[in-house]
Length: 243
Image (cartoon, rainbow, N blue to C red):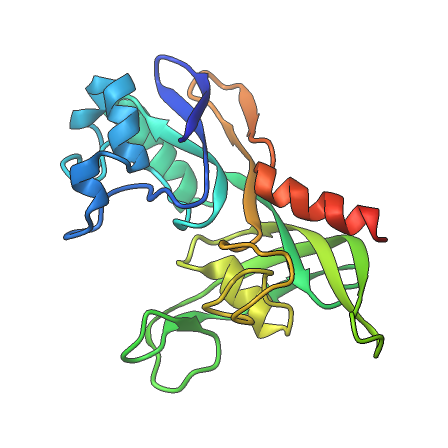
């Protein structure tokens, strides 16, 4: 279940686990079960029922995380703060930092500047597909933190993984996942854009929203952080053990 990590009169901040939708999708059973983040937040903060561009379906929701991405997310508690936060996002004044474990060796740092569009007839996004729909500019920065080597059981060599920090400068659907896959380093556990299996037994992708940083209406700057999910920490512990 999502855990509340911070709140003010204007907003609440949650650490969302993987497997939880941020808000309902039409026809999705979780709407009836009350298990979306929006449903849970509305129980704790009933006032958000009237907040947002579409409060009936997305009460208080200013930004999103994919269902299987964990981490920090902000919920607006009043319309004034919702509008304030929406403006910050539109003007690229919110800094979000993610941690990802990717396949292969990534050296140093870099910027991926490649438009993303929807592949016709699918839910997949791409930077290269022909006749893409809804093509939008997208920019992602990344920095390698640590490279891990894992021996192959048959003794024919080793496979590599890299822990990286990622900062998206735009907010496109699946942006980080698509961009990292486009440079040959899909996220571990991402079956949509990478290998269908992984050696860690993860049933989600290894992508976690570590922090969000923005200026508040009173002129201060705040940085809010969410601890790495236990199942992801377990993967890192395993890699460290066999490093």
